[in-house]
Image (cartoon, rainbow, N blue to C red; front, side, top):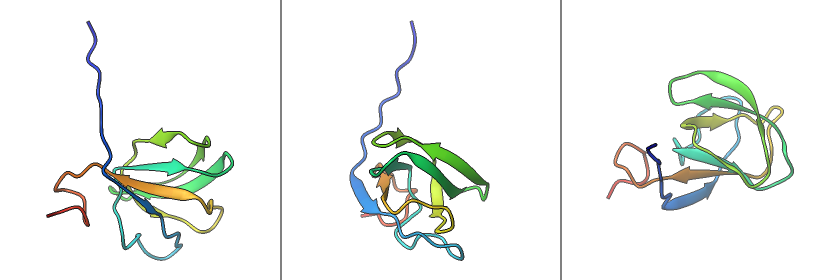
Length: 91
């Protein structure tokens, strides 16, 4: 029998793309591309920078602190799961 992981996201915020700073609304527990499928440069919460391919509509459970504007997409949504570790969702 396998375990199934389920996450419910409670916030969805348009990511602010920047080549110099982390997103002021982040970090995000996941990201979603709502536009056409394309590559996107990101920085994870651990500081790793990568260029990844994002398919339109899919949710990528990658903890992201920055979506770069260079080579970035204009339609990235940051998602948070309501846990206390994510800035902006404490309450």
